[in-house]
Picture 1 (tube, rainbow, N blue to C red):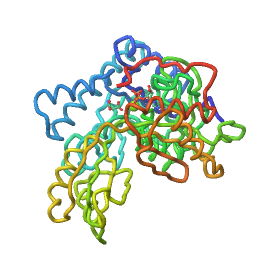
Picture 2: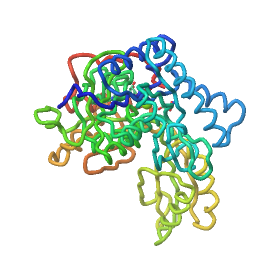
Picture 3: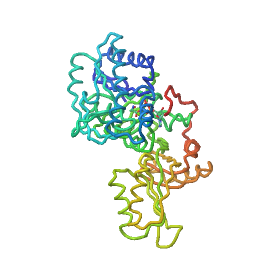
Length: 428
Ligand code: ADP
Ligand code: ASP
Ligand code: MG
């Protein structure tokens, strides 16, 4: 594995906790300048300071419970603009030229889905010009401009990671470094499992499952992008110089994690569960229900269908979805209740999801048994189960999640002797 790069182009992304205050900005600027002085061309992607994005959302909600997507995006992108300008000033103080660019100026072109826009093209002409002039380019993360409407869009929470990898791919960078408030990707969230181990490497495939299961250290779309373009990602701390975690196509030879059955445990408290009670057990009914939910562009996750406790000839259908879509989904289902003829809808937002991820699962049949035994010993009741080739997920009470994660981590003998360091951030 290459740990130092020949002179080349490096994209460095700094998360909100790394630039939480003026001191943080200066620390990050020094780090960027050191990379530049080592002879590299540097493109930086920066997030909003600290918890700015959350604070802006809270502020919008004090004005209206349902802000228009266009205006909310305009508001939220301001957070990243503040960071990019301050960072450019801090770099300039250190004697180097830095030019800041909004997502739109950097050529990040998206579709028009406000709050969760997808990047459809990156045309980084102005970034290339800045590099050619010997400057450091600073790009505001998590934002772009809609190809159709020309409105400003955001890529969804945590989306600055995706900006970084998309730019790295478009610029044919040698590596994309993601600087955050922990030393890399760990075997579980170090805020929940202090004994979590830092992974030397993790494959795109494993990282995709971890990110999709709630390990917010990397944005899901960023991993999808990296896999498509085979862009190596180095996740590391901006508060230390420790080697971080490499997200790559294959584990490098000799990396012990290669043999591990489980590479990581992820948890997610952002989902809710809807149960549709007393659904007529007829062909086409499930299709009707899920079509109506899909028409509203709502992503559902797990689905379970049971024989109804209510009466024969009826079933109960439960599914999970993001809490943020709960109200919309419930309203849609109420609209088709008469037509479909089910008895009632139950909404439960006190659930959590716990997932084990590891490519080694393919060849180790005992994983489920060990996992469920650990949950049982920890007193965690399993409400739903879903699996993929390299993942097992369960739904349980939200209040059981932390205990469940720690129990699974111990059961699979992943506890390390030392404590993982969390350098900053509020975990919000
Ligand atoms: P940033 O602001 O730098 O984008 P995030 O808060 O988005 O940082 O992501 C870093 C956080 O992700 C860590 O502080 C940690 O609490 C959380 N996290 C969840 N799962 C993991 C994991 N498996 N490895 C490392 N961090 C994780
Ligand atoms: N500032 C945005 C957020 O908090 C984007 C990011 O940090 O990646 O979600
Ligand atoms: Mg993040």
